[in-house]
Length: 257
Image (tube, rainbow, N blue to C red; front, side):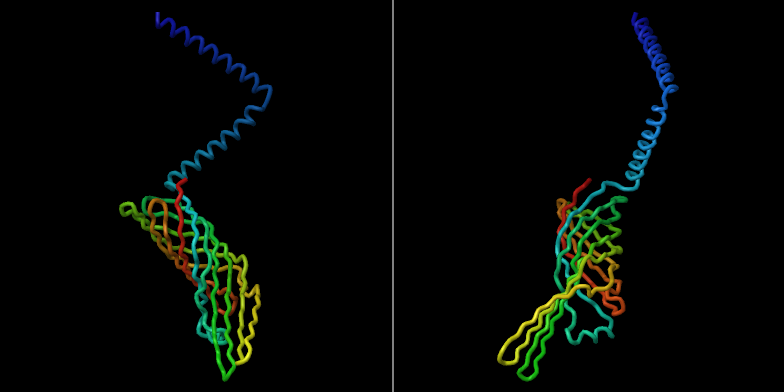
């Protein structure tokens, strides 16, 4: 009895399938909607699945790390150009802002590729005092250069209990957004004191700055503290051999996607 019921249902399914195939064939002969509409969809779906499989095969759990902190920057000169700074003094470190977001693509449990977007405030400070007889003057200036950064670094990491340690290195391309230099000159002639302040823009001629980045990071419960040394490789003043070196200190939070 059971076999008879099953055989009956199978017969009905086969008949229904034949009818659907016949109707689909008639509809397909009268219209090109089916091949023109469904084939591209199937192709796109195949591409999406293939890209996803390749991404999963190449990379593990992708994560992002928004961060913010401070930059400490200073100009460096060759010996010849250093003589040109006698009137303003030697360059000193200037604090600034750095913030951005990193994207981490793990290759395995130890090695990953890290890139992202960043904003870095670089530059330098100058200060010099001079006294002759009853005449004194003091010169100070601060150079601010805002950069949009694109780093590409190789990172190695190791877990020690609940703490994750990592070191990284690689190049970064910085694109200048703005630059400004603020001057302040104070005069004292023994009787009166005069102060003059003014600002200039556009003194940094090169629109790009290539850096070599080397740094490390310590992480606990997704919160992390990082320090990065940026060694300037580009003459930012086009001919004066002025390079900008920076140290970045920032705090971030890792988010797994």
